[in-house]
Figure 1 (cartoon, helix red, strand yellow):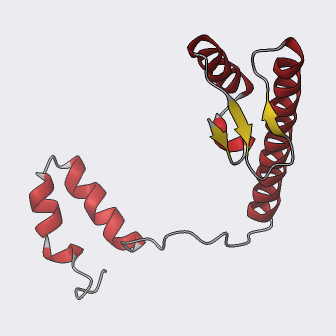
Figure 2 (cartoon, helix red, strand yellow):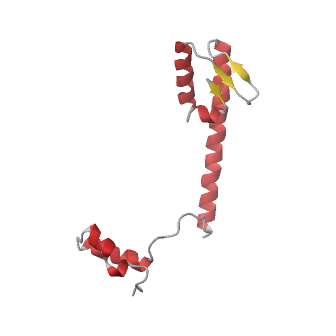
Figure 3 (cartoon, helix red, strand yellow):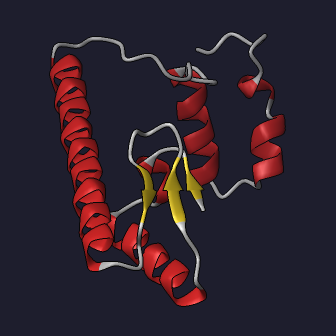
Length: 124
């Protein structure tokens, strides 16, 4: 198996180690292309240890990065900053009308076809 990035080999350390065990049982090999570590002898105790440490470091880096992203989003949202994303398809008024129709147990086809849901119709 040629690995272009340890973060591409599995989602967690456990995933990667399970795959390495699968390769060991089947007589497979692992090679790190363009990663600077070349062949990893997953059949030797030293190779297994090196792989485990490297994958654990990758997972730690990804978890730290994820925490930083989460912290950044919290800071930006609390400051009232727009983080982008999809624009709302319906106005607040149209959403209120749809909720009212749903509470009245109108069928979804009727709600979607209601003239007040049209963008051309002004919502009052």
